[in-house]
Structures are given as structure tokens and as C-alpha cells.
Length: 213
Image (cartoon, rainbow, N blue to C red; front, side):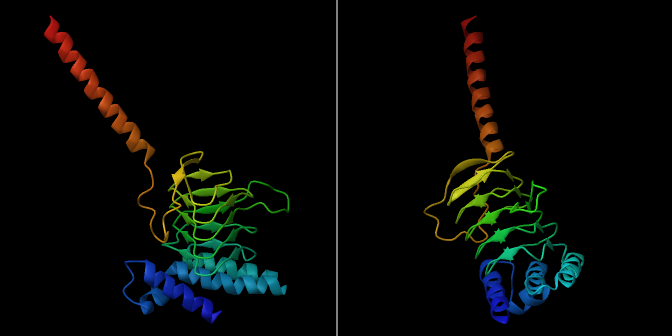
């Protein structure tokens, strides 16, 4: 567990430009604290001490604002940035080197005791406020845009944006995905730009009509 904590600290320090030192990351990053407490709760859950694991999970939520079911499986070097409002359900699986921003929900849509939460592959980035729902798979290297609602599988390397989410290209050539969700396509901006171009065309046409009089 100490090795995992060391990896988590090093990954956050390396990839977060706001981090000034590893000591700051260790003492002041609630996302790191949430993951560390979850790893303890997960071990308790697997050992059969499930009530104690659930109690520790509630303590974790109270202290950090992050709710992770103790049965959820988190890989190595997972980063929860800011953390407030993150919810990760019981059967969720998060791969190595994933980044999860504030307000994200990895939730279920099935009330039966089955696999009902998402599986994230390696190096997945989930933007702030996104909801990933159901027993779906988000492939390695995929990115989920801020506030997207994802209810279908996302292929490896793809970008999913919108409500409901749709695919908006791939990032197959991107070598690193950590903390790089700033260049996602903005559909609203593209619509506004198209409207602006059309308005310019209409103004030119109107000028032409006035000149013909």
C-alpha cells in the first residue's frame, strides 16, 4: 500500500502544475486522501469486514467529499483532481493512470445485483461533471468531455462529448493524456461560429439588394 501511495504522490506531482512539492501533494490533496482511504476500505471489503469497510467509506466521504464504494476497483496512479462531488459505484472499475475531475459520477442504471457500473480502461480522462452510467466500457486512452452523459461504450482513444454523449474524433496519436482535457471539441462554439458566418453572408446579400435599388 505504501508503494501505491508513493506512486500516486509522484504521479500527481509530475502532472499537476499547481503542485509545488510532494509534501504538499501528500498533505493537501483531498483526491489523494480519498484514494488512500479507499484502498484501505477495499482491502477490508475483500477480507470480509464489509461493515467496517462501509463505515470507513462514509468517513472518507465526510472528510474528502469523494464517495467511493469499498467494492469498487481502482488501478494504480489514479488521480482524482479537486475531488468534490465524485461518486464511484460498487461494481465500477478504473484502470491505471486514469484522471477523474470533480463532479464525476461512475453510476449504475440497473437495480439488480449484477455488474452495473462502468469499466474505464487505462489512461482515461473524465472531465468535470461528466456522468458515465451503466455497465459500459470506456476504452484505453479515451476522453470524456466535461458534463457529458455517457450511456454507451466508448472505443479506445475516442473523445465523447455532449448529452447524450456522441463521439467527436479520436486521439490515437496523443502520447500522454494526464491533465490534458482542455482541447476537447466545443460543439456550441462551432455552432456559434457557423451562425456568425451565415449572419455575415446575409448582411452582404442585404447590402447587394440595397445597391440594386
